[in-house]
Length: 134
Image 1 (cartoon, rainbow, N blue to C red):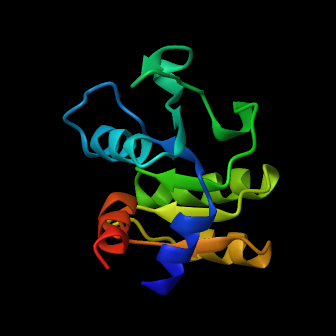
Image 2: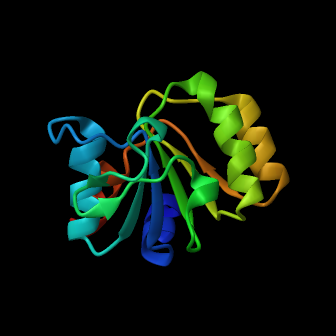
Image 3: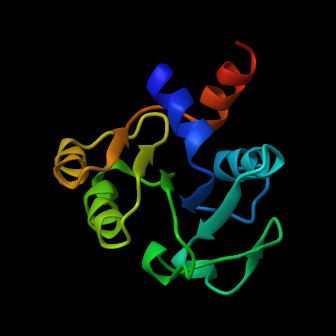
């Protein structure tokens, strides 16, 4: 828990991969919540590039985001995590965070070899709520 709390205290710029304009989807609920907590969230979804989700411009990939990104928050299947990990290295992200039920040993190896923190199978919103209620 301490590690996730420290990450959420320190880093405030998040790329959310798998963002959706369907506001009932978990990724949208988490994005809205993170925005309310004061995080800058960059939605990433190639099929919605250039559109808006919760007031933010949607990017096609994390490498297109024109500002520093600290946390990459992943709402995509585990098998996509390797490619996302490689992009995390390219943009010098600080944390690769895979949401609930998402795990990938190869992605972990890639980011940790590049001094990027790796979190798997945890929800940023749930972790933040725990941290607020301590």
